[in-house]
Image (tube, rainbow, N blue to C red; front, top):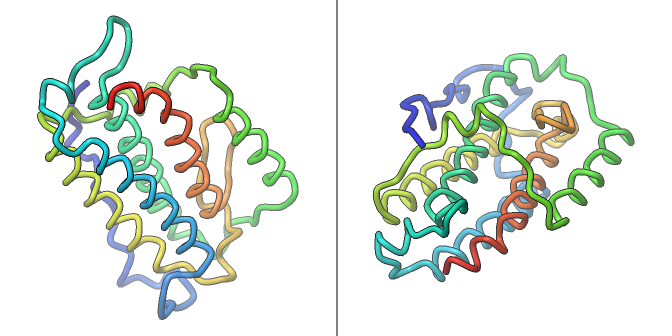
Length: 197
């Protein structure tokens, strides 16, 4: 895996008028979904606390190491966030999700719960950074989640269904769908992670 210097770099939209107004706090629905993501992450980091660099990079032949799995999850979130940042200027004119998108999310969640392997998209593979030790990965993940939270804090209630997110297979979805998929993606990889802890 190689480091891409653009990873984690996002557009500062906080001073622009792409959103109708600036909310006083994070929308409760988004807060709940973000809290679930963070609870999973902190649980994992607690279990991984104390791992040596050798353990962090240990892998069976043909399998990913803990380093590679977590780097993959971080890269997927960062690339999704970068895409959504690019779509912010057009959020007012973006379409809204409906029943069809909800059905696609049911199928997407089901696919992540099955014990099948999916080939990672080339763009994510090519932009997945390599971390030299667990602390470096944790610090990068902290920064990525802080950036995600700042992004979420700009959403108003009437923008939650806007098609701001794009999944490579399910197509255009909303911000809630994005957070739900981030967690489903993590849970999909959890059996692999658990075996390495």
